[in-house]
Image (cartoon, rainbow, N blue to C red; front, side):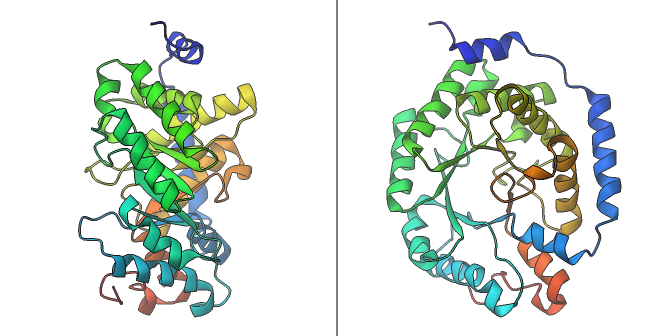
Length: 302
């Protein structure tokens, strides 16, 4: 079978990553971020970009209930502060979270498609996504089949993403590339292009379940893919750095890199997210005092 037209174009247009441009952009982003150290409005912006995440085998209904309550109560506990963009959990706990988040602006995201390994047949991946959506998920964070990608079966990766987007319907689809397993920047660019062509609303770096999480180099390549799509079609695809982003300084690097490549219009939670479990606590401590650093920690109520 011939590859889909969009995929054929991607494969024929592959080019090496411009490492000089990448280095310059990363240096520029780091320099700019120094000017924003301690800026209250910037810290509030970071807080509002976070997908507050718990993805542990020991997650319980009680833990998720309390996490959601803490997320939605931020503006009342800390007047003037925004809350996070979303809460991200496993499909089995979506119904629990849905009840807690009802009536709020916080989105409910669910990982799916055999997270984190992605080693399931497509019909089971589709069933898991369908279940999460039926339980009330607003957003799906799917993982790609890295084994198929590294075997050169790009069509299968494209077809799976397209099929999952079809199951999602009008729900937001974030495609996790797991960049630490893709064996090089050129592969990260190819995976980004494939995900975007297949219908991704966001592309995301990592599951947070392997040692190599987000990196500025990987995100630069992903942003370049997003920019190429935008310049070609006008479609604005989101970016989600995830994995190892635990403090404001690191988050600032990614925000400024995104702004450098794509512009300020991308710096909002419709087009940029951070996948994080501890970043929100770090931001709260900077905004309100060290005593609140443990607001979301497991020893503070769940």
